[in-house]
Amino acid sequence: MNRLSSVALALMLTLTTMSTGSIEFEDFQRTEDTSNGFTVDGNDTINRTDTFPFDVLFDDYHEYYEVVSELQRFANDYPHIVEFYYLTDMIPAGQTWQGNEIVGIKISDNVANEPDFYDDPDEETFFIVGNHHAREWMTVVTPLYFVYFLTHFYGMEPTDNDGDGLINEDPIDGVDNDGDGEQGGRVDEYGRALFDGIDNDGDGIIDEGIDEDPSEARITHLINNREIWIVPILNPDGYMYDREDPSRFWRKNMRDNDQDDRYGGECDGVDLNRNYAFEWSHNTQFTALIGDDLEPEFTVDDDNICSDVYHGPRDFNDDDGDCKEGFFANPCVIGDQNTGDVTGVDEDPPDAQHTDDDEDGKVDEDREGGFSEPETQVIEYLTWRLDIYEDYPQDDYLEDYQNGIDRENWPDMFVTNPNGDYIRNYRTEDHDMKHNIMNSVSYHSCSELYIWPWGYKDQDPPHELYMENQVKPLMNLTGYGNWKDQGGYKVSGDINDYQYGMQGSFSYTVELNSCGSQGGLQGGFHADPLLIRPTVRMHLLTNMHLLDESPEARIGQMFPDYGDLNGPGIHSPEDTMMPELSILSSKGKT
Image (cartoon, rainbow, N blue to C red; front, side):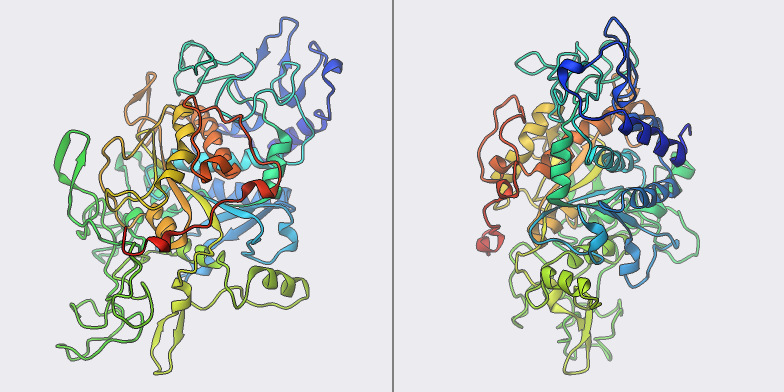
């Protein structure tokens, strides 16, 4: 892999930043300026194949250990805005099945002066996760590229990033605002070039000239007023296994289901995007309908360990400590997989109705399954860590930290009840709708789609209009479709439904790239590396749009059909206000 060393990159970006001070337009020298590392000759021809200096690092896919190293370097180089975490330190096992770490970063202002996992209640949180499925390589580089983008432009003076004598004239909005973009592909109603992921002019560069001179002030403002959590590789075991031998097209993690001490057999692994507790196993062994083609062999959610969509083992735990004697000699043993349907075991699973199924005054506290895997436990624990608890809110947590008081900002997962039973702490499941993650994106491939809840059923969720309007301009600008219009199959136990149904987050899945040929290049799970740069650049648009919150979409107003995002944006934290989430008000109606 042809990649610059971190030292060389740091030097290059340092020299670039030094050369990009505040430039007045009338002082711009076309024949001498080398702003942002690009040279311009006397004929105004820009000699470049890259949009930004760090593009040179994305000529191929990144390995797991490279991603870990890169995230650590960001925390070292930008300690005021980047905090690095070994996220597996939170979970009981402390590592994946094969002993690897799941890592992530938080990007925001003042991170150096905040305790671990602090989440400012005055700033909305944006969450990005990649690589639930091992073989989907593009889902790793897409969030990683966003990290490079945010850190590079943070705090920079207004800069001519494309060497055309103009400053901030071509922001991240999906259209070619300065008229130098690739022609021959998709255009909006004003004739401005749009992304399409195809080299239409045959110059070897895809979608050049689109969104190449962003507003440094906007990026800085967003970082200063948001909490951005990014986990590029959720499935390190599977990712490394598939990278080692791409012919495997491995999807799942590396759980040893058949317990033969050999990893990678056809009956090993769990589909992580079927392993979230919300509506877990709801569609087990359903036959999927994809468009007009019925595929009887394909199931979207399976209890067969050999299936590619195996959702993991059933819980069989008495999570709330109310199991009663049944037909078995010892019906309430934790982990006993032979208990059957004994009263008190798995009798109040998390669901969209949020009903107290066992009438014990608690809701959704006794799950049937889900979160059996270290990888999905990381998401569960991180979500809880970022929650806001009434008895120990985040602002008190910060004040204690600043006063030298070291306290955990979240409750224990399991506690001992008055009867001496070791049970799941119900408080962690409380549906108070005060969760701080407002928007979340899970990257997948392939099929060029935006997806939002519900996944487990065909009916629309209470906030269908909000979510549809948030991504409608993105579909217009990228040419992507949406899952519902495409007649996509039902998916239960996925991160979208969990984040929305349990946490009150507007959650989206983005399916990257075509599954077939894309402009003569191979798409699919292992898309041609030449598609990396245009794909990751295209989805700066996705990340920036959802990070920016688009207040108009949050209150249900429609965007123009051409999807131009140049309308009102955020100018202050007040512009990010949105109606209170009211999922619980639909109790019994979903």
